Image (tube, rainbow, N blue to C red; front, top):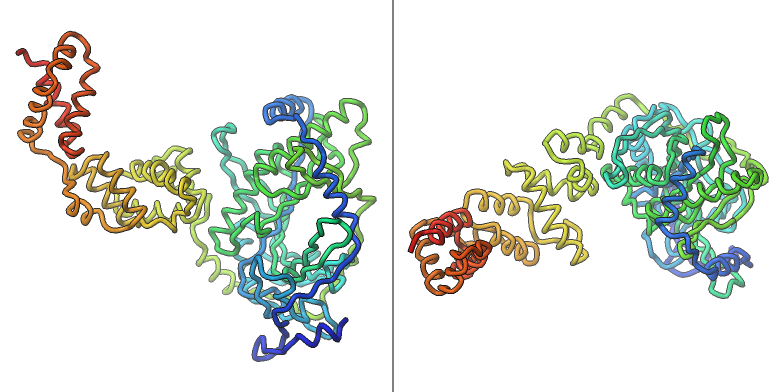
Length: 547
Protein backbone atom coordinates (compact mmCIF):
# COMPACT_ATOMS: atom_id res chain seq x y z
CA UNK A 1 0.00 0.00 0.00
CA UNK A 2 2.88 2.37 0.79
CA UNK A 3 4.17 1.97 -2.80
CA UNK A 4 0.72 2.84 -4.14
CA UNK A 5 0.63 5.99 -2.03
CA UNK A 6 4.11 7.13 -3.06
CA UNK A 7 3.27 6.99 -6.78
CA UNK A 8 1.04 10.04 -6.32
CA UNK A 9 3.55 12.07 -4.30
CA UNK A 10 5.76 14.86 -5.59
CA UNK A 11 8.34 16.88 -3.71
CA UNK A 12 8.41 20.63 -3.34
CA UNK A 13 10.33 22.99 -1.04
CA UNK A 14 8.81 24.21 2.23
CA UNK A 15 11.54 26.62 3.37
CA UNK A 16 15.01 27.49 2.06
CA UNK A 17 16.57 25.21 4.66
CA UNK A 18 14.14 22.26 4.67
CA UNK A 19 11.88 20.24 2.45
CA UNK A 20 8.40 18.77 2.66
CA UNK A 21 6.12 16.81 0.38
CA UNK A 22 2.65 17.32 -1.07
CA UNK A 23 0.26 14.71 -2.44
CA UNK A 24 -1.48 15.27 -5.75
CA UNK A 25 -5.23 15.76 -5.48
CA UNK A 26 -6.44 12.20 -5.68
CA UNK A 27 -8.60 10.37 -3.18
CA UNK A 28 -7.23 7.67 -0.87
CA UNK A 29 -9.47 5.91 1.65
CA UNK A 30 -8.49 3.57 4.44
CA UNK A 31 -11.32 1.42 5.80
CA UNK A 32 -11.90 -0.22 9.17
CA UNK A 33 -14.72 -2.17 10.76
CA UNK A 34 -16.79 0.16 12.94
CA UNK A 35 -19.04 -0.47 15.88
CA UNK A 36 -19.20 3.24 16.70
CA UNK A 37 -21.25 3.97 13.59
CA UNK A 38 -23.77 1.29 14.58
CA UNK A 39 -24.00 2.77 18.08
CA UNK A 40 -24.54 6.23 16.65
CA UNK A 41 -27.30 4.97 14.35
CA UNK A 42 -29.09 3.19 17.19
CA UNK A 43 -28.79 6.28 19.34
CA UNK A 44 -30.36 8.48 16.66
CA UNK A 45 -33.34 6.15 16.43
CA UNK A 46 -34.28 6.62 20.08
CA UNK A 47 -37.61 8.32 20.70
CA UNK A 48 -37.44 12.03 21.54
CA UNK A 49 -37.75 12.88 25.20
CA UNK A 50 -40.63 14.92 26.63
CA UNK A 51 -38.16 16.72 28.87
CA UNK A 52 -39.05 20.21 27.65
CA UNK A 53 -37.04 23.43 27.99
CA UNK A 54 -39.30 24.72 30.76
CA UNK A 55 -39.20 21.43 32.63
CA UNK A 56 -35.41 21.34 32.38
CA UNK A 57 -35.05 24.88 33.69
CA UNK A 58 -37.32 24.12 36.66
CA UNK A 59 -35.54 20.85 37.36
CA UNK A 60 -32.11 22.49 37.38
CA UNK A 61 -33.32 25.39 39.52
CA UNK A 62 -34.64 22.89 42.06
CA UNK A 63 -31.44 20.82 41.95
CA UNK A 64 -29.17 23.79 42.57
CA UNK A 65 -30.89 24.44 45.90
CA UNK A 66 -29.35 21.23 47.24
CA UNK A 67 -26.34 20.65 44.98
CA UNK A 68 -23.55 22.69 43.47
CA UNK A 69 -22.54 21.98 39.88
CA UNK A 70 -18.83 22.07 39.01
CA UNK A 71 -18.15 22.72 35.33
CA UNK A 72 -14.90 22.98 33.39
CA UNK A 73 -14.35 23.18 29.63
CA UNK A 74 -11.60 22.05 27.29
CA UNK A 75 -11.78 24.05 24.05
CA UNK A 76 -9.90 23.32 20.84
CA UNK A 77 -9.48 26.28 18.50
CA UNK A 78 -8.38 25.60 14.93
CA UNK A 79 -5.99 28.31 13.75
CA UNK A 80 -6.47 30.23 10.51
CA UNK A 81 -2.96 29.65 9.21
CA UNK A 82 -2.21 29.27 5.50
CA UNK A 83 -0.52 25.91 6.03
CA UNK A 84 -0.58 23.16 8.65
CA UNK A 85 1.41 23.14 11.87
CA UNK A 86 4.41 21.08 10.75
CA UNK A 87 4.28 20.86 6.95
CA UNK A 88 3.48 23.00 3.89
CA UNK A 89 0.07 21.45 3.18
CA UNK A 90 -2.81 23.90 2.98
CA UNK A 91 -6.09 23.00 4.68
CA UNK A 92 -9.44 24.05 3.29
CA UNK A 93 -12.65 22.99 5.00
CA UNK A 94 -14.80 20.85 2.72
CA UNK A 95 -11.96 19.72 0.42
CA UNK A 96 -12.06 16.30 -1.19
CA UNK A 97 -10.98 13.63 1.34
CA UNK A 98 -7.23 13.06 1.48
CA UNK A 99 -6.47 15.85 -1.00
CA UNK A 100 -4.52 18.03 1.49
CA UNK A 101 -1.91 15.55 2.70
CA UNK A 102 1.81 14.82 2.46
CA UNK A 103 4.25 12.33 4.06
CA UNK A 104 4.57 14.55 7.15
CA UNK A 105 0.87 14.69 8.04
CA UNK A 106 0.44 11.07 6.92
CA UNK A 107 3.12 10.00 9.38
CA UNK A 108 5.24 8.18 6.81
CA UNK A 109 8.70 6.96 7.89
CA UNK A 110 11.49 9.50 7.48
CA UNK A 111 9.22 12.55 7.22
CA UNK A 112 10.27 15.29 9.65
CA UNK A 113 8.13 18.14 11.03
CA UNK A 114 9.05 21.84 10.55
CA UNK A 115 7.25 24.25 12.87
CA UNK A 116 4.99 26.91 11.34
CA UNK A 117 6.02 30.16 13.09
CA UNK A 118 2.50 31.59 12.71
CA UNK A 119 1.31 28.99 15.26
CA UNK A 120 3.65 30.49 17.88
CA UNK A 121 2.41 34.00 17.13
CA UNK A 122 -1.24 32.94 17.45
CA UNK A 123 -0.52 31.16 20.74
CA UNK A 124 1.23 34.22 22.21
CA UNK A 125 -1.61 36.50 21.04
CA UNK A 126 -4.24 34.31 22.68
CA UNK A 127 -2.16 33.87 25.84
CA UNK A 128 -1.86 37.64 26.23
CA UNK A 129 -5.54 38.18 25.43
CA UNK A 130 -6.47 35.69 28.17
CA UNK A 131 -4.22 37.42 30.73
CA UNK A 132 -1.92 34.39 30.97
CA UNK A 133 1.66 34.04 32.09
CA UNK A 134 3.76 33.12 29.05
CA UNK A 135 6.44 30.43 29.18
CA UNK A 136 9.47 32.09 27.63
CA UNK A 137 10.92 28.64 27.05
CA UNK A 138 8.51 25.81 26.18
CA UNK A 139 8.69 22.60 24.21
CA UNK A 140 6.63 20.09 22.26
CA UNK A 141 5.87 16.57 23.46
CA UNK A 142 4.62 13.35 21.93
CA UNK A 143 1.25 12.18 23.21
CA UNK A 144 1.09 8.47 22.43
CA UNK A 145 -2.18 6.74 21.66
CA UNK A 146 -3.63 4.56 18.93
CA UNK A 147 -6.60 5.61 16.84
CA UNK A 148 -7.29 4.95 13.15
CA UNK A 149 -7.24 8.67 12.25
CA UNK A 150 -3.85 9.23 13.95
CA UNK A 151 -1.38 7.78 11.41
CA UNK A 152 1.81 8.43 13.41
CA UNK A 153 0.50 6.69 16.52
CA UNK A 154 1.18 9.88 18.48
CA UNK A 155 0.09 13.51 18.49
CA UNK A 156 2.53 16.41 18.74
CA UNK A 157 1.29 18.45 21.70
CA UNK A 158 2.57 20.17 24.85
CA UNK A 159 2.51 18.44 28.23
CA UNK A 160 4.33 19.83 31.26
CA UNK A 161 5.44 23.20 29.86
CA UNK A 162 2.53 24.76 27.95
CA UNK A 163 3.12 28.10 26.26
CA UNK A 164 0.64 29.95 28.53
CA UNK A 165 -0.80 29.36 32.02
CA UNK A 166 -2.78 30.98 34.85
CA UNK A 167 -5.06 33.32 32.93
CA UNK A 168 -8.63 34.55 33.14
CA UNK A 169 -11.51 35.69 30.96
CA UNK A 170 -14.30 38.14 31.82
CA UNK A 171 -17.89 37.52 30.75
CA UNK A 172 -21.06 39.63 30.88
CA UNK A 173 -24.13 37.40 31.19
CA UNK A 174 -27.18 38.31 29.05
CA UNK A 175 -29.92 40.27 30.83
CA UNK A 176 -32.50 37.57 30.09
CA UNK A 177 -30.45 35.23 32.28
CA UNK A 178 -30.09 37.65 35.15
CA UNK A 179 -27.13 39.64 33.85
CA UNK A 180 -24.03 40.22 35.93
CA UNK A 181 -20.28 39.97 35.45
CA UNK A 182 -18.24 36.77 35.85
CA UNK A 183 -14.54 36.00 35.74
CA UNK A 184 -13.45 32.45 34.90
CA UNK A 185 -9.93 31.10 35.33
CA UNK A 186 -7.83 29.69 32.51
CA UNK A 187 -5.56 26.82 33.57
CA UNK A 188 -3.46 26.60 30.43
CA UNK A 189 -3.18 27.24 26.70
CA UNK A 190 -1.07 24.85 24.68
CA UNK A 191 -0.25 24.16 21.04
CA UNK A 192 -0.90 20.87 19.30
CA UNK A 193 -1.82 19.32 15.98
CA UNK A 194 -5.20 17.92 15.03
CA UNK A 195 -5.89 14.30 14.13
CA UNK A 196 -7.69 13.12 10.99
CA UNK A 197 -11.38 12.33 10.77
CA UNK A 198 -13.39 9.13 10.54
CA UNK A 199 -16.25 9.12 8.05
CA UNK A 200 -18.80 6.52 9.17
CA UNK A 201 -20.80 4.83 6.43
CA UNK A 202 -24.58 4.58 6.45
CA UNK A 203 -24.52 0.79 6.71
CA UNK A 204 -22.22 0.90 9.72
CA UNK A 205 -20.06 -1.94 8.35
CA UNK A 206 -16.91 0.13 7.99
CA UNK A 207 -15.48 3.64 8.39
CA UNK A 208 -13.28 5.70 6.08
CA UNK A 209 -10.28 7.75 7.16
CA UNK A 210 -9.83 11.31 5.89
CA UNK A 211 -6.41 12.73 6.82
CA UNK A 212 -6.99 16.27 5.50
CA UNK A 213 -7.33 17.57 9.06
CA UNK A 214 -4.25 15.71 10.35
CA UNK A 215 -1.58 18.21 11.31
CA UNK A 216 -3.87 21.26 11.31
CA UNK A 217 -2.71 23.60 14.11
CA UNK A 218 -4.81 23.83 17.27
CA UNK A 219 -4.71 25.76 20.49
CA UNK A 220 -6.28 23.96 23.43
CA UNK A 221 -7.66 26.18 26.18
CA UNK A 222 -8.36 24.46 29.50
CA UNK A 223 -10.54 26.36 31.96
CA UNK A 224 -10.58 26.16 35.72
CA UNK A 225 -13.73 24.40 37.05
CA UNK A 226 -15.27 27.80 37.83
CA UNK A 227 -18.63 27.58 36.08
CA UNK A 228 -21.77 26.61 37.96
CA UNK A 229 -24.59 26.61 35.36
CA UNK A 230 -25.12 25.72 31.73
CA UNK A 231 -25.64 29.41 30.90
CA UNK A 232 -22.28 30.39 32.45
CA UNK A 233 -20.52 27.64 30.49
CA UNK A 234 -22.17 28.62 27.21
CA UNK A 235 -21.31 32.30 27.73
CA UNK A 236 -17.70 31.39 28.59
CA UNK A 237 -17.41 29.46 25.31
CA UNK A 238 -19.11 32.28 23.37
CA UNK A 239 -16.65 34.79 24.83
CA UNK A 240 -13.73 32.58 23.78
CA UNK A 241 -15.18 32.55 20.27
CA UNK A 242 -15.41 36.34 20.30
CA UNK A 243 -11.81 36.66 21.51
CA UNK A 244 -10.31 34.43 18.78
CA UNK A 245 -12.38 36.24 16.14
CA UNK A 246 -11.33 39.67 17.39
CA UNK A 247 -7.70 38.51 17.34
CA UNK A 248 -8.12 37.02 13.87
CA UNK A 249 -6.43 33.75 14.88
CA UNK A 250 -9.47 31.61 14.00
CA UNK A 251 -12.89 31.94 12.39
CA UNK A 252 -14.31 30.13 15.44
CA UNK A 253 -17.06 28.43 13.43
CA UNK A 254 -18.47 25.56 15.48
CA UNK A 255 -20.25 24.03 12.48
CA UNK A 256 -16.88 23.61 10.73
CA UNK A 257 -15.16 22.24 13.81
CA UNK A 258 -12.98 25.34 14.15
CA UNK A 259 -14.09 25.65 17.77
CA UNK A 260 -14.84 22.44 19.66
CA UNK A 261 -15.77 22.19 23.32
CA UNK A 262 -15.66 19.19 25.64
CA UNK A 263 -17.44 19.87 28.94
CA UNK A 264 -16.70 18.21 32.29
CA UNK A 265 -19.63 18.20 34.72
CA UNK A 266 -19.93 16.98 38.30
CA UNK A 267 -22.15 17.89 41.24
CA UNK A 268 -21.68 17.85 45.00
CA UNK A 269 -23.99 18.56 47.94
CA UNK A 270 -24.00 22.20 49.03
CA UNK A 271 -21.20 22.71 51.57
CA UNK A 272 -19.14 19.69 50.50
CA UNK A 273 -15.56 20.56 49.52
CA UNK A 274 -14.65 17.36 47.72
CA UNK A 275 -15.51 17.25 44.02
CA UNK A 276 -17.94 14.64 42.75
CA UNK A 277 -17.25 12.21 39.89
CA UNK A 278 -16.95 14.16 36.66
CA UNK A 279 -18.58 13.21 33.39
CA UNK A 280 -17.30 14.45 30.04
CA UNK A 281 -19.83 15.57 27.40
CA UNK A 282 -18.99 15.65 23.68
CA UNK A 283 -20.87 16.35 20.42
CA UNK A 284 -21.80 19.91 21.37
CA UNK A 285 -22.41 21.77 18.11
CA UNK A 286 -23.77 25.06 19.46
CA UNK A 287 -23.70 27.15 22.62
CA UNK A 288 -27.41 26.49 23.09
CA UNK A 289 -26.77 22.73 22.91
CA UNK A 290 -23.97 23.12 25.46
CA UNK A 291 -26.27 24.87 27.94
CA UNK A 292 -29.03 22.28 27.49
CA UNK A 293 -26.64 19.33 27.72
CA UNK A 294 -25.13 20.62 30.97
CA UNK A 295 -28.55 21.28 32.49
CA UNK A 296 -29.68 17.77 31.56
CA UNK A 297 -26.52 16.22 33.01
CA UNK A 298 -26.84 18.17 36.28
CA UNK A 299 -30.44 16.98 36.66
CA UNK A 300 -29.49 13.38 35.75
CA UNK A 301 -26.70 13.21 38.31
CA UNK A 302 -28.84 14.85 41.01
CA UNK A 303 -31.59 12.30 40.45
CA UNK A 304 -29.09 9.49 41.10
CA UNK A 305 -27.85 11.26 44.25
CA UNK A 306 -31.42 11.67 45.50
CA UNK A 307 -32.05 7.96 45.02
CA UNK A 308 -28.96 7.06 47.03
CA UNK A 309 -27.24 5.87 43.85
CA UNK A 310 -24.37 8.35 43.75
CA UNK A 311 -21.94 5.52 42.98
CA UNK A 312 -23.71 5.09 39.64
CA UNK A 313 -22.33 8.46 38.52
CA UNK A 314 -19.18 7.04 36.92
CA UNK A 315 -16.32 8.66 35.09
CA UNK A 316 -17.30 8.35 31.46
CA UNK A 317 -17.69 10.18 28.17
CA UNK A 318 -21.27 10.92 27.16
CA UNK A 319 -22.66 12.26 23.89
CA UNK A 320 -25.33 14.94 23.66
CA UNK A 321 -28.26 13.82 21.54
CA UNK A 322 -30.03 16.77 19.98
CA UNK A 323 -33.02 14.69 18.90
CA UNK A 324 -33.81 13.19 22.29
CA UNK A 325 -32.40 16.16 24.24
CA UNK A 326 -30.34 13.99 26.57
CA UNK A 327 -26.83 12.64 27.10
CA UNK A 328 -26.03 8.99 26.36
CA UNK A 329 -23.00 6.88 27.26
CA UNK A 330 -20.26 6.82 24.61
CA UNK A 331 -17.51 5.03 26.54
CA UNK A 332 -16.52 4.31 30.14
CA UNK A 333 -13.22 5.48 31.57
CA UNK A 334 -11.56 2.78 33.66
CA UNK A 335 -8.86 5.16 34.85
CA UNK A 336 -6.55 7.92 33.72
CA UNK A 337 -5.14 7.33 30.24
CA UNK A 338 -1.40 6.74 30.09
CA UNK A 339 -0.25 8.74 27.09
CA UNK A 340 3.45 8.11 27.82
CA UNK A 341 4.45 11.70 27.08
CA UNK A 342 8.05 12.43 26.24
CA UNK A 343 9.75 15.45 24.60
CA UNK A 344 9.38 15.61 20.81
CA UNK A 345 12.90 14.81 19.55
CA UNK A 346 12.37 16.24 16.05
CA UNK A 347 11.48 19.79 17.17
CA UNK A 348 13.61 22.30 19.09
CA UNK A 349 12.49 24.28 22.10
CA UNK A 350 10.30 27.33 21.59
CA UNK A 351 12.19 30.33 22.95
CA UNK A 352 10.40 33.68 23.22
CA UNK A 353 12.18 37.00 23.65
CA UNK A 354 10.82 39.99 25.55
CA UNK A 355 10.99 42.07 22.37
CA UNK A 356 8.93 39.51 20.42
CA UNK A 357 6.26 39.33 23.14
CA UNK A 358 6.10 43.12 23.55
CA UNK A 359 5.68 43.63 19.80
CA UNK A 360 2.72 41.24 19.81
CA UNK A 361 1.26 42.83 22.94
CA UNK A 362 1.43 46.27 21.32
CA UNK A 363 -0.31 44.97 18.19
CA UNK A 364 -3.31 43.44 19.97
CA UNK A 365 -6.68 44.90 18.94
CA UNK A 366 -9.31 46.16 21.36
CA UNK A 367 -10.77 42.96 22.80
CA UNK A 368 -14.47 42.25 23.52
CA UNK A 369 -14.26 43.00 27.26
CA UNK A 370 -12.48 46.32 26.66
CA UNK A 371 -14.96 47.24 23.94
CA UNK A 372 -17.96 46.51 26.19
CA UNK A 373 -16.58 48.72 28.93
CA UNK A 374 -15.94 51.53 26.42
CA UNK A 375 -19.48 51.26 25.05
CA UNK A 376 -20.83 51.39 28.61
CA UNK A 377 -18.88 54.60 29.19
CA UNK A 378 -20.51 56.04 26.07
CA UNK A 379 -23.85 55.76 27.87
CA UNK A 380 -25.24 52.71 26.06
CA UNK A 381 -27.38 50.18 27.93
CA UNK A 382 -26.02 46.71 28.64
CA UNK A 383 -28.44 45.28 26.07
CA UNK A 384 -26.98 47.62 23.43
CA UNK A 385 -23.42 46.84 24.55
CA UNK A 386 -23.84 43.05 24.33
CA UNK A 387 -25.42 43.26 20.87
CA UNK A 388 -22.87 45.63 19.35
CA UNK A 389 -19.75 43.98 20.81
CA UNK A 390 -20.87 40.43 20.03
CA UNK A 391 -19.68 40.49 16.41
CA UNK A 392 -16.30 42.01 15.57
CA UNK A 393 -17.57 43.28 12.20
CA UNK A 394 -20.71 44.86 13.67
CA UNK A 395 -18.55 46.55 16.32
CA UNK A 396 -16.18 47.88 13.65
CA UNK A 397 -19.17 49.20 11.63
CA UNK A 398 -20.58 50.92 14.73
CA UNK A 399 -17.23 52.47 15.64
CA UNK A 400 -16.78 53.81 12.11
CA UNK A 401 -20.32 55.25 12.18
CA UNK A 402 -20.04 57.07 15.51
CA UNK A 403 -16.73 58.62 14.46
CA UNK A 404 -18.87 61.15 12.52
CA UNK A 405 -22.09 61.15 14.59
CA UNK A 406 -22.81 63.01 17.81
CA UNK A 407 -25.92 60.98 18.73
CA UNK A 408 -24.36 57.61 19.63
CA UNK A 409 -27.59 56.07 20.90
CA UNK A 410 -29.37 56.89 17.63
CA UNK A 411 -26.58 55.21 15.64
CA UNK A 412 -26.87 52.12 17.87
CA UNK A 413 -30.66 52.04 17.38
CA UNK A 414 -30.35 52.12 13.58
CA UNK A 415 -27.83 49.26 13.60
CA UNK A 416 -29.74 47.15 16.15
CA UNK A 417 -33.12 47.86 14.54
CA UNK A 418 -33.56 48.32 10.79
CA UNK A 419 -30.10 47.16 9.75
CA UNK A 420 -30.10 44.03 11.95
CA UNK A 421 -33.62 43.13 10.75
CA UNK A 422 -32.57 43.48 7.11
CA UNK A 423 -29.47 41.31 7.64
CA UNK A 424 -31.56 38.64 9.35
CA UNK A 425 -34.22 38.59 6.64
CA UNK A 426 -31.68 38.52 3.80
CA UNK A 427 -29.28 36.19 5.67
CA UNK A 428 -26.39 38.61 5.15
CA UNK A 429 -23.51 39.74 7.35
CA UNK A 430 -22.87 43.44 7.91
CA UNK A 431 -19.91 43.23 5.52
CA UNK A 432 -22.20 41.96 2.76
CA UNK A 433 -24.73 44.80 2.73
CA UNK A 434 -24.12 47.77 0.40
CA UNK A 435 -24.43 50.40 3.14
CA UNK A 436 -21.19 51.94 4.41
CA UNK A 437 -20.68 53.42 7.91
CA UNK A 438 -19.99 56.80 6.32
CA UNK A 439 -23.38 56.85 4.56
CA UNK A 440 -25.16 55.78 7.76
CA UNK A 441 -23.48 58.73 9.47
CA UNK A 442 -24.66 61.00 6.66
CA UNK A 443 -28.20 59.62 6.88
CA UNK A 444 -28.39 60.25 10.64
CA UNK A 445 -27.02 63.78 10.16
CA UNK A 446 -29.62 64.49 7.46
CA UNK A 447 -32.44 63.43 9.78
CA UNK A 448 -31.03 65.35 12.74
CA UNK A 449 -30.67 68.53 10.66
CA UNK A 450 -34.23 68.24 9.38
CA UNK A 451 -33.20 67.77 5.75
CA UNK A 452 -35.28 64.58 5.59
CA UNK A 453 -37.81 62.98 7.92
CA UNK A 454 -37.28 59.74 9.82
CA UNK A 455 -39.78 57.98 7.55
CA UNK A 456 -37.92 59.01 4.41
CA UNK A 457 -34.70 58.07 6.19
CA UNK A 458 -35.93 54.48 6.50
CA UNK A 459 -36.74 54.37 2.78
CA UNK A 460 -33.29 55.70 1.89
CA UNK A 461 -31.65 53.22 4.28
CA UNK A 462 -33.33 50.26 2.59
CA UNK A 463 -32.16 51.38 -0.84
CA UNK A 464 -28.63 51.99 0.44
CA UNK A 465 -28.47 48.48 1.94
CA UNK A 466 -29.82 46.88 -1.25
CA UNK A 467 -28.13 48.92 -3.99
CA UNK A 468 -25.59 51.22 -2.37
CA UNK A 469 -25.15 54.83 -3.40
CA UNK A 470 -25.03 58.03 -1.36
CA UNK A 471 -27.55 59.76 0.87
CA UNK A 472 -27.13 63.12 -0.86
CA UNK A 473 -27.45 61.52 -4.28
CA UNK A 474 -30.71 59.76 -3.40
CA UNK A 475 -32.20 62.87 -1.76
CA UNK A 476 -31.50 64.94 -4.89
CA UNK A 477 -32.50 62.22 -7.35
CA UNK A 478 -35.88 61.57 -5.72
CA UNK A 479 -36.55 65.11 -4.47
CA UNK A 480 -36.84 63.95 -0.85
CA UNK A 481 -35.83 67.16 0.92
CA UNK A 482 -38.13 67.72 3.90
CA UNK A 483 -40.67 70.59 3.75
CA UNK A 484 -39.83 72.93 6.59
CA UNK A 485 -41.61 76.05 5.32
CA UNK A 486 -44.62 76.63 7.69
CA UNK A 487 -46.58 78.39 4.96
CA UNK A 488 -46.26 75.47 2.55
CA UNK A 489 -47.25 72.96 5.24
CA UNK A 490 -50.23 75.16 6.20
CA UNK A 491 -51.47 75.10 2.58
CA UNK A 492 -51.38 71.29 2.54
CA UNK A 493 -53.21 71.12 5.91
CA UNK A 494 -55.92 73.53 4.70
CA UNK A 495 -56.45 71.36 1.63
CA UNK A 496 -56.72 68.14 3.68
CA UNK A 497 -59.18 69.72 6.16
CA UNK A 498 -61.30 71.08 3.32
CA UNK A 499 -61.45 67.61 1.70
CA UNK A 500 -62.55 65.92 4.93
CA UNK A 501 -65.39 67.99 6.49
CA UNK A 502 -67.08 64.95 8.06
CA UNK A 503 -63.93 63.93 9.96
CA UNK A 504 -63.39 67.56 11.00
CA UNK A 505 -66.89 67.67 12.48
CA UNK A 506 -66.29 64.38 14.34
CA UNK A 507 -62.96 65.66 15.70
CA UNK A 508 -64.54 68.83 16.99
CA UNK A 509 -67.33 66.71 18.45
CA UNK A 510 -64.84 64.98 20.75
CA UNK A 511 -63.16 62.27 18.62
CA UNK A 512 -59.67 63.73 19.08
CA UNK A 513 -58.00 60.50 17.94
CA UNK A 514 -58.81 61.62 14.42
CA UNK A 515 -55.80 63.91 14.65
CA UNK A 516 -53.75 60.92 13.54
CA UNK A 517 -55.99 60.51 10.49
CA UNK A 518 -55.41 64.13 9.44
CA UNK A 519 -51.66 63.87 10.04
CA UNK A 520 -51.51 60.77 7.86
CA UNK A 521 -53.42 62.52 5.07
CA UNK A 522 -51.06 65.50 5.21
CA UNK A 523 -48.06 63.17 5.03
CA UNK A 524 -49.63 61.37 2.08
CA UNK A 525 -50.31 64.67 0.30
CA UNK A 526 -46.72 65.85 0.94
CA UNK A 527 -45.30 62.46 -0.09
CA UNK A 528 -43.85 62.05 3.39
CA UNK A 529 -41.80 65.22 3.16
CA UNK A 530 -43.65 67.43 5.67
CA UNK A 531 -41.66 68.09 8.84
CA UNK A 532 -43.53 66.08 11.53
CA UNK A 533 -42.97 68.65 14.28
CA UNK A 534 -44.25 71.58 12.25
CA UNK A 535 -47.05 69.48 10.79
CA UNK A 536 -48.49 68.51 14.20
CA UNK A 537 -48.15 71.99 15.63
CA UNK A 538 -49.98 73.70 12.75
CA UNK A 539 -52.52 70.86 12.45
CA UNK A 540 -53.59 71.11 16.11
CA UNK A 541 -54.03 74.87 15.75
CA UNK A 542 -56.15 74.45 12.61
CA UNK A 543 -58.31 71.63 14.01
CA UNK A 544 -59.02 73.49 17.23
CA UNK A 545 -59.66 76.84 15.58
CA UNK A 546 -63.19 78.17 15.91
CA UNK A 547 -65.01 78.13 12.62
